[in-house]
Amino acid sequence: MKFLIDNQLPPLLARELTRAGFDAVHVIDLKLEKAPDSRLWAAARESGRILVSMDEDFHHLSMRPGETVRLVWIRMGNTRRALLLEKLLPLWPELVNRLERGERLLEVR
Image (cartoon, rainbow, N blue to C red; front, side, top):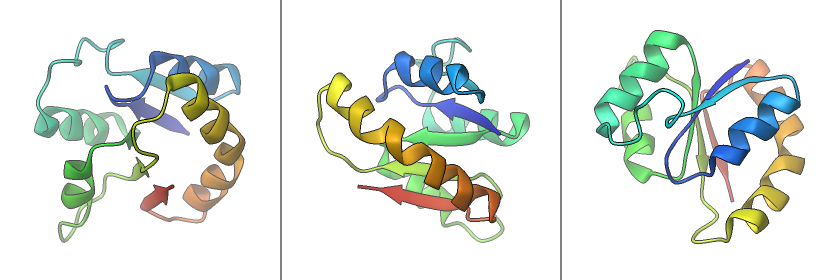
């Protein structure tokens, strides 16, 4: 399973997911940290990656008819990076199960 981690999330998330056996890259790794949302969305589509973001704009894009990009939408508010990772990483196995079952949009609170 391949993931593209957006700017609002720490690059460490991509590293931790890679360590756990996933193919995960952060937008910084792809030199897309200053790219508009439309370019990130296209990059996720072109590479077959699941976008992981806190950006509500991506939620709106995911709701378009016929959209194929999958999104893990993190809605944990302004949380320190360490606490965010502490909360998010234990949830990852269940998120992966849901993605494997075909869910396209996962909202994580």
